[in-house]
Length: 154
Length: 422
Image (cartoon, rainbow over all chains, first blue to last red):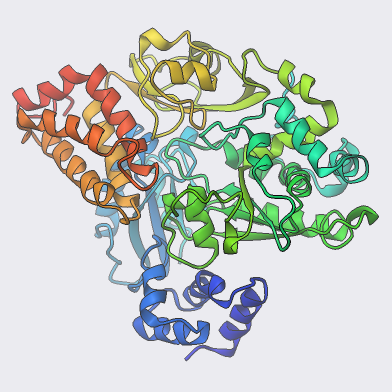
C-alpha cells in the first residue's frame, strides 16, 4: 500500500528517534504530503508499518487539526478565527470568500481546487486578519484582496 | 536602549548566516561555557541573572534546570518550545525567523548546563518560514562544528532536530509536548514527576521557550548583573512585548522589562485608532485576565500584573475597544479553548463547550438571567486545582475578569434579548 518513496521517507524519520512509534506523526505527514489526505486504507497501512494498532494510530491522527482524515481539495485555505483576527473583522473576509467559492467550512469546491477550514491563531496578530493557503501566509486581508490571492492557485 | 535579542533582526531581510552571525560575536558564549565553565557554573549564572521563563509561566529558568538530577546515568534531553499558539501571541515568530542562530546558540548553552546530548526544536506547523530558516541554521551549525560530536574539541556532544507539529494548542503545555514528540496523543501528563526528572522517554528533560533560550548567549557574554540592569523592574532583562487589536501601530518590540502598560499601548502601539475608545486588554495572550483603565500605569512584569489579578503571560496584549462586543470577544476565546481541550478530564471537556454555548446564546439574544450564575459557577469549577492541566483555568481567566469589569454588558445581552453591538 505504501509506495517505496513513502517508505524511504518514513524509514528516515524512524532512524532519527529512539522508539519506532515516535515517528508516527511524521509518517502521517509523509503520506498526507503524497496523497493529500489520510484514508482508512492508508491509515491501516501506516499503522502496520509503524507496528501500531490502527486504533492507536487513528487516535493520534484524529487528535491533530492538520491531519486530514477526509479528502481535501488541491489547496487548503486555513482562515484564522482567533481573537485578534476576530476583532479586526475576519468574519467579513470569511463570508466574502465563502460566497466567492460557494463553499462553507469543511467543504471543497466542485472542481476540487479549494477546501476551506477554520484555524486557530496563526501568530500574525499584528497584521490581522490572516489566512494561509497551503504553505503561504497572507495578512492584512481585506475582501478586495481575495481575487488576486486566489488567482495564484491553479 | 539595549535590545540584545533583536539587534540583528532587520525587517524584510533574511537572518544572519552563521558566518555573519560569528562576525557580530555569535557563538562566543558556546566557546565560553564549553571551555571555561562547568555545567553547574552555567546554571548558577542563569539563576543569578533571575531570568524567568518567557513562555508564559514566568518560572526561574536556572531554578528549573537545577531540578535535573545530574548524577543519573543515561540520556537527558533539551526541548525548545516553539509551538507558539496562544491566541494573540506572535513574539517567538520574530526570533525564529529573524535570528535562528541566536536560538541555537542558547540551546547549546542550556544543553551543556544540564548535560543533554540530544535536543529538539518543537515548532508549530504554521511557521513555514521559521522551519526553513531553522533547518538551514542547524545544518550550518553542524558544518561549523557547533553541533554534533566533540564540539570545539571539548568532548561535548549535542544533536539537534527540528520537529514540526500538526496543530494542537495543548502541545504548548510541556508534558503534552513531550507526549507529542513520543508519537502519542498530546494529553498532558500528571505532575509530579516533573519533566526535569522524568520527561521525554522517561528521562530528565528541560523544556524552555524560544525567547528564554535566546536570552542565554547574552547572559553568558555579559553577566548576570548586566542582564538585571537591562530592566526597569525586579524582573531581569528585556522582554518582547506585542500589541494587537484596533490600535494605530500593532507590532512587537523588545523593551526593558517593566515598561508600563500605558507606554506600550500609547507610545509603541500608537494608542487606539481614531474611531474607537479603549475598554480593556488581555496582557499576555488569551488565557490571561482582563486589565482595564485603572491598570494602565502598572509595570508589565510578572509580579505587578499578578498583583492586579492577571498574568503577564506571553507579554503580547490583545486590546478590546468600545466598538467590539466584550461578550463576543470572550465567546471567541471560549470557542478556541473548547476546541483545543484535549478532552482528557471531564470539567474541561464538558465545561468549556457549555460555557461557549451559553455565550453564544447571549450573542443570539437567547440569554437567560440564570446564565450569569452558570458562567460564574464555571469560573470556579474549571478553576485551578479542579482540572488536570492549566488549559481550563487559563480559559476561565478572561471570562471571570470580563464578568467583573463588563458585567453590565453581559446583562444587557440578556435584558435586551440581543447583542447591543450588532
